[in-house]
Length: 454
Image 1: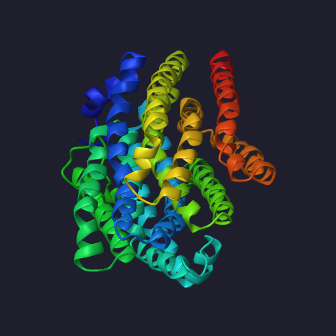
Image 2 (image 1 turned 120 degrees about the horizontal axis):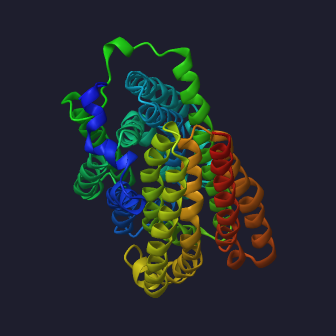
């Protein structure tokens, strides 16, 4: 299908426009949660196989390099979130031509942006590795991993961005296909490159790039075969100033949000390194296990974005409030269950990735602190995504700015200074409790204000 009338009668449009709120949230969110949960393996598989090398310095290096992945996602969000928001709103306003034009612009920006990132990152590679917090024992391992990730950044960014573009039109199942297939490839390739070819940490990076490359190709295939509501078109190959402006208006704050998160992650890692490489390894394992719970709320938040964007474009504010209420109830209930699992089985989960007693003890302590974020952070993420979907990035960015720079990083430094490692790991749970109340209240007030004005 293309930007024609038959697109408007598609079942995907019914889900966005008329499906019962709770059922719509589940229909859009659950496939993404499943796909993102599988994507946890992108992180955990590398960690698992590197752990089999019994080299805690390589384990620490993988975690030190993780902010580079976050920065790539931040830059991808500039294109992905900005384009997705405009596509959903345009479809809600029944302007399918503008939606298709935006999609084509998103494809072009992906290629250009990844080329710039790769060139800049490789030019300043030693400086990047130093900023990440790598020291003598971990510097070379971190450099090897980061270099390969930068070389393949088109695949990583393309896989992420094209998934967002597919979700924006309601094609959730297509958007997760690239995640699932790419992850499966990564699982198969990791042991081949790490052990079979003896590349160790370099092999883990190569497998990650190739997995993302396959995922990106799968997404492109759906567009090429006409299975989507929208398709890139040669007649839209030149972006208009209006479309670029709207993409960057939403996308730049979205990218800065992820960048702020990566900065907070770097601060956290540098503080953890003060307690030694084993503590850093334990922190990294706990953080990666937490991504399982994280992808649950991120999946529902991402699933709610096209729902909120479409109905905002259609000026259906009552449905937006219903969707928000249903989404928060669903995600908070699920995360409470996940929190219980993490608390009971923390030592067992850490032991999967390391048999070092000190790493197991510290990792369990970290996981049991971090798990208290789960019932609260879902509402924060859903509020941010809703503001992006509405084309109001100033609010979404404000939430992240307060969350990371005003609350989390100062709390991290204060609690670390006052209570040491035992204190710093509680900075994030405290932050999320405060931010849940603030972000949901702000979103409800903005929606109700526009509803009254309308």
